[in-house]
Image 1 (tube, rainbow, N blue to C red):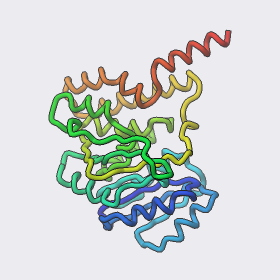
Image 2 (image 1 turned 60 degrees about the vertical axis):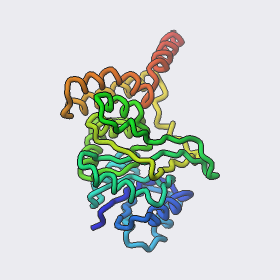
Image 3 (image 1 turned 90 degrees about the vertical axis):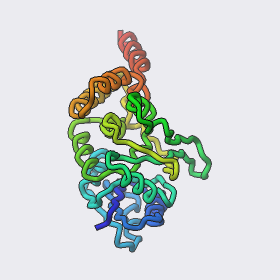
Image 4 (image 1 turned 180 degrees about the vertical axis):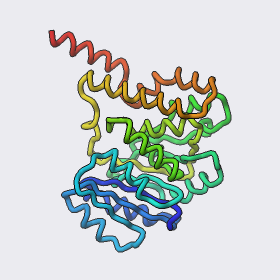
Length: 283
């Protein structure tokens, strides 16, 4: 059984998936399995996957499109490794990515997620933005929780987890959060408030800007936005309730939530403005 599992959800990824798979196969750390869950692709994705002869690749074909969140979630269950990471079919990383993150998480028993440096990259290879992991995020301090919470980046979601822990938590998110938008931040939230996240700049993760937009999952009307905010806050409260936190930590989370939400779901001012605009324009 491989020590590290890579879960790759895909739907119509024929333009990019070959490069993404090869990037994992070329990792300096080789004791891995790649489990790909195809969500009903119609563009030749399956043929590309089957073109790889490496026995470390395992394909799961859904008989119908189950939606993005369940397709991500089932991969953590289907994999067998002690450690686990998700990899989008259009993203890349340095060849030492798995090796560096694995060393970090094994050296820190209290850590359940390790993230690398995030480098947003265009398809022509140019860089559109960077998010280094600052040492101050890990420095022992009563304010570490707030620093990490407000600095957290969606690219951290694609770091290396202890599989049994992330499997349990993603299952809970899938069961209790009805939206696609911002669900990755909800999963991260549970790790952040428990102080289980660490990072390193010794390796980079490259989210690729392919021109495919995820904004179709973003709520459009103010009523939808308010429902999403309510569900997001409800799940955050659920996570906080189940975590072993001091009163000071709970207070820090409470005062951090407005800024945290603004950067990860919908800006509260924008929601309020849209609500007022819709209400008055309907009269």
